[in-house]
Length: 241
Image (cartoon, rainbow, N blue to C red; front, side, top):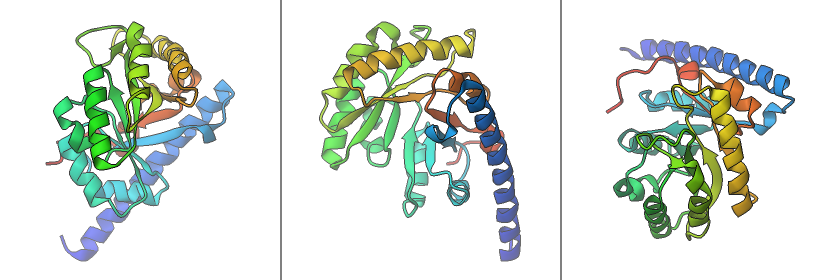
C-alpha cells in the first residue's frame, strides 16, 4: 500500500472509530440520565484486544486515554509501541502468577486479582520495578469455581491482603456478568461487594462492570469503569502476534 493509500485507510478508520465512540457515549449519557448519574464520573476503557497499536493511537487522538488488554503477549508490545502517549493501561484478563513481573512493568491497573498468591506476586513485582500498581478484586458473583474471580465471601479478606501489600493500592472491584445470570443481578451483587471493599479502604471506589452488551445495567448499578470493546472497535479480529 502506498503512502496515500495508507493515509486514506487511517482516515477511514479514524472516522469509523469516531462514529462508534459517539454512539457509545450517547448510550452512556442516556443510561446516566435514566439512573440520575453524571457521566463525567464514568471512565471508558477501550478494550483493544486483537486490534493494532495504530487504533490505540487513533482513539487517543479522539480523547480515549484508558486502554485495556487481556493477554500479556499482546498487551506488552502494544504498550511499548504507544509509550510516548499519556495512557492508563488496564490489564483485564486472567493473570498467571508467573506473568506478574511482566505485567507490572506496563499496567497501571490490574482488574483480575482473585487470589492471595497473585497479590504477593504482584506486590513483589511492583516493588522490584519501583512502581505502584492499582489492583481490583475480581469477584465471581455466582461463585462458580470454574470461572475466574474470588468467591463473594472471600472478597473482604482478599481486599485486606491487597491493602496490606507494599507496592499495591486497593482500587475496588470488578466482575464479568456470567451467562445464565441477569446482568442487573450480577452488578447488584458487585455493588454489595464494593461496599465491603470500601470498608477496608474508603478510597477503593472503582466498580469495573459493564461491557458492550450490558453497559446500561452496569451504570444503573453504580459502575465507575466500563470495559468497551466490540461497540467501539468492531468485531474482534484474529489475535495480534
